[in-house]
Amino acid sequence: MSITLKNKKIIISAGGSGIGWSSAKIFLDKGATVYLCDINPTFLNKCKKHKLNNKKLFVFQCDASDENQVKNFFSKILKKTKKIDALINNVGIAGPTGTLEKLKSKDWENTLKVNYNQNTGNGTRKI
Image (cartoon, rainbow, N blue to C red):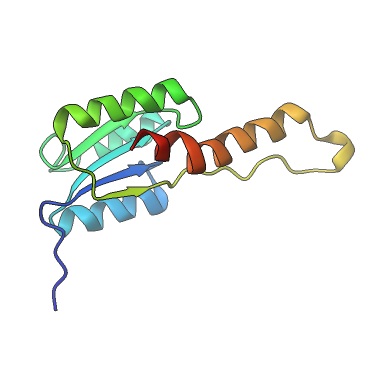
């Protein structure tokens, strides 16, 4: 049995590389339209070379820890479609490592901002 995603609309955060980009290519091969964002312009430029760019693949730069950028990302998507079938919150960072006395509070705060806010708040609330 062949699985099809024809006419499905999928959003992927941190979609420019790794699991996000691999997932995007599979979804595109199965017929989905994919809207992806990433913070890294080098990764995004690579994605923009895909044969379906601006046809079934739409690529945006977005810092998923920044609520205003996420809001802008979703506004752009909503200009292209009113239907969203799936949201893949793929953003995450490992956070600081080292001995406790050498870790900085701002580094932990950034880890929480990126991992918690994006995966439970910024992206999901916009839908």
